[in-house]
Amino acid sequence: MFLTQKLGERYLWVDALCIVQDVDVVRQQSIENMDRIYAQSLCTIVAGTCKDANEHLPGVTQKTQWTQFLEPVSRSLTLSAHFDYKDHLEATKYNQRAWTFQEFQLAHRLLIFAPNNQTYFSCASAVYSEEVEPGPTLDHDMCMLDGMHSLKLSPGKNHIWSTYQRAVRNLTSRHMSHERDILNAFAGILRRICPERSIEGLAVPIFDLALLWQPRERLRRRTGFSSWAWAGWMGRVGWFDDGALSAFADASACETQQVGEWTRARAWIVWYSSWGTNIMSAAYLLDGPPWLRGSAPGREIQEERFRGLSTGNFAPRPDMIPRRLRGLERQRRHIRYLQFWTVSVYFQIELNDAAVLRWKSFQPESTGDGLRLFLLRDRFDEACGWVLLDEGWVEKGKTSDIRNQEFILLSEGSSPRDEGNNEEVEDETGGGIDDREFNTMMITWIDGIAERAGVGRVRRTALANSCWRDMKWKEIVLG
Image 1 (cartoon, rainbow, N blue to C red):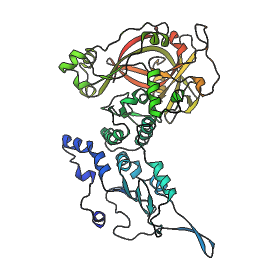
Image 2: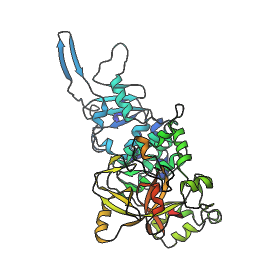
Image 3: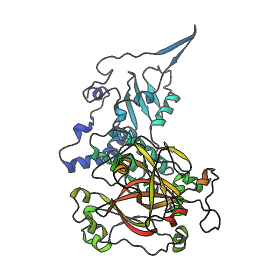
Image 4: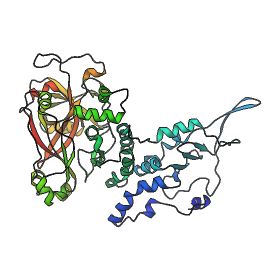
């Protein structure tokens, strides 16, 4: 408050004091407006030196000292080294909290108290440090500006996908005091990245790509959220770049246009989605779950994509979710479900001791802490893909038979040869080369509801060699 007065301002917003915490409706309304509060504030104070709310801001009530790094070069020239706030801020308590991510990203002006006892002012066009004496004009330091740009997101309609990935990776690496707030702490940023609709933290225009998130460490389940969403898990997540969009690169096409082209060419699922609490409404019982996104490709495209498998006009059954939720505990009725038709196959999984996974079944990528790579094998015991699971599946395998697992196909992946790999896979018809792969999700069933176990890849040629039963179209309720 003293700092606010010294700045000549009248109002100070403090989340813990200004949000009514014990009235859920009021609390939620306040949280939904947080992005507006941060974005429209005159300045956001970044307490980078403080470990909790009880610590004082350095230099506000008492003077501080800092060390300047100087090197005399000649009698008339001395060089000094000064550092931007980026390196000092990264290891702070402030930078480890999930809520401060939104605060930092949405603010137009920042007054930063850094651990090196320096105070910085940062805005979109300049960064100033108190140790630098200004000349006749107030010139900013370009190096410091570069550091600021490396921390701040730059939302734009032409690069929604890459900005979204960066934001989720950053958020999920941070700590939350109340895990239920995960989407609240992301909602404001997500609206800036993609103003269109989103569900469970996945922006609908990039839904098919966003669904392919991968853990970067062993995750723990977050109650009250869907398993198919990264928000349903606690821990770091990200996406592996398989070069999928490069096939749609055009000199005049922006990233968002490439995503649209990829979705039209590589995805086929028509997604429907509903909250479990909405299934007894008259509209739901009459029309079924609301449409989310997607349109079914033509019959010829589908039958060429899934050779040997006939297709039809698949519509969601209105009574499917109500029947399956009947009798389930209250917690599971209060999450968002996906309902859709896709191809289901079975493969055997086999633990692989490699410390890397192959995102395209050929190119290596580090598995991450607490995660294990499992190979997929078809009915002829041929390796045909992989899935990334946590170490808990290794323990399960010691006490039970976990080999036969169900996989649902999500979208087409990029060809292994797209990145210069010359390994070829013979088409099973002998009519040339077929090196396509599918993004696939391994699912488990609990009381008639499917849940995500892991995401991986399977070769197209393996679909005809499904274990246990042949591949088939199947309606899925994914929770």
